[in-house]
Image (cartoon, rainbow, N blue to C red; front, side, top):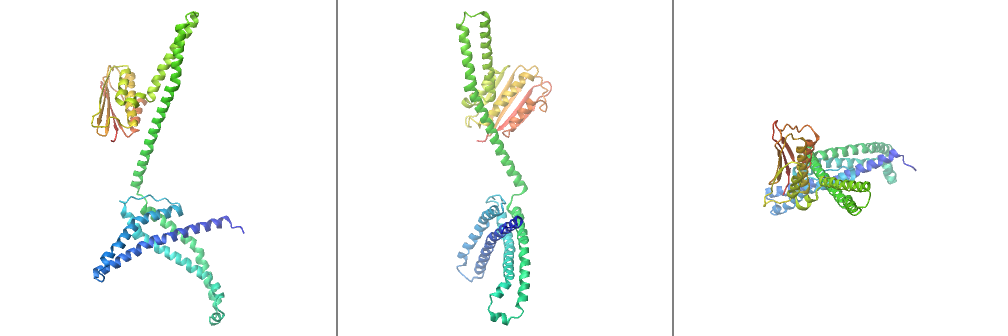
Length: 408
């Protein structure tokens, strides 16, 4: 016999609801029994009925506290495994909500569960009334005339109640889910706080992953393409020096190819440094910034102040952001700072803050809201929860300040 899909789904849903209700009954009523036990012993202690009550009272009170906290985890398992509803894991400090649910709200739900299961049992007994009559002794049937009519009424009433049980069970399950989420769930502010925490962690992971990918590309370029270009430039230089008897046109071609190879190596070196300079990993921020200052197209005064009592190296992501902020700032100064003749870079470690200040003596007038370069600097700083400020009045000077968190 094939069960219709709709009926099969209804039976599965009813079985799930009844299982959820039956599993919740002991979890909801056990704290009530413990409360009554503790209240009974407390009454004996106050009335002086039992001298052992004060000592024995410790047991139910301890179990009551354990139930108030520990039953929360059991409720989480019940909601998750039976109904697929995920409740957050509450901290121990959030005991008010846990005790309120397990000792106040839970018993009320337990009473409803008990009434529903009792109604189910009574409906089953009533629906089988004719069966109970048929298995009764003949003498009982003789003594109780009209039993068939009464048994039929009971059976119809029992079947009607049984038909209503799935609706009542589904309603009670929905009620428990709503109450569970309201009491054992997180508030809107807590949910937003946890969301911010998750987003912060995921962003930090994305920043680390991007930094690791830049390191990988830098390493592959340095060990692969760059080495091949260096080998090509050496071979062309060797050919230029040894093949002196070639026609002038051929020597010009070799000479041009040699220059192109050296220019390609220089461009690749700049690209590698722009991705992630190896000196930043090997020698730290001070040495990497010194290299930037030396290659800058205008004089740069660099001052790095890292107190000896603080860690000399910060997180790799923070160092990378500080390096690229200085690199892009110096590039912007060289390209866009009008009449700038020098720049100054100051890096200072103040507790858990790494402050980077870049200044130039140009005519100013830079607008942070315009141009992708300054917006890119602000985005780089924000990628590690840093701040970016800029002051560029007309007539100068221009000053950029970046503060990056570097917890110890």
